[in-house]
Image 1 (cartoon, rainbow, N blue to C red):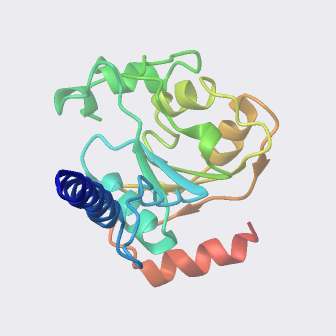
Image 2: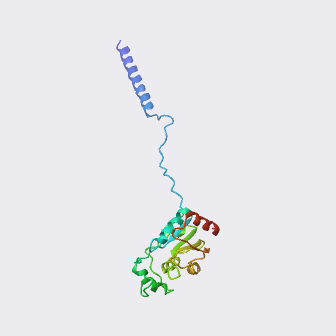
Image 3: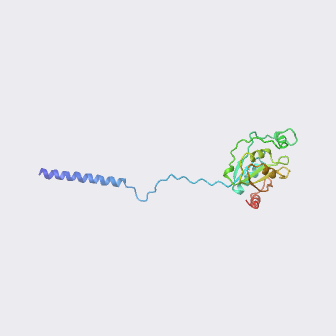
Length: 206
């Protein structure tokens, strides 16, 4: 009788252990179709192949640069002098002002505030600048001599209070570091429309 009771107890213990093991296995099972977590981040937006690099002392040229970047889906970069120009610096009637002295000196090279222009990341560089005393500001000369533009498509567009684009494009091309593919530039009003800019750019054949 004792042997029978002991056998029954042993059988119950074995069945209990098997049942716990089965329940544990079920608890660890992952439901079918559960999505797996991933660490993939959204792909960064592609940068434009066109860069609009502009210098503007009075914001007139800035307006043209921003319209150009918007019209062409281009990236925008401001060319800044280490020492900003004041209103007094731009007094056309004073022969001793900073800008007047610089424009009369072909060797003048105003220092840049930074050398972070993303030239290497772009295929086409559009330089946007005002016309001072019939020429590009000397800060533009500093800029084209400060980077390697080899293989880049380049052109310049300008704003002016009365002068034409003159030979600014030719002179910038002459000073540009590296062998770039230069196209003729154009004088625009600061209020030029996106359509006008798009048509001009399309005609360049870049």
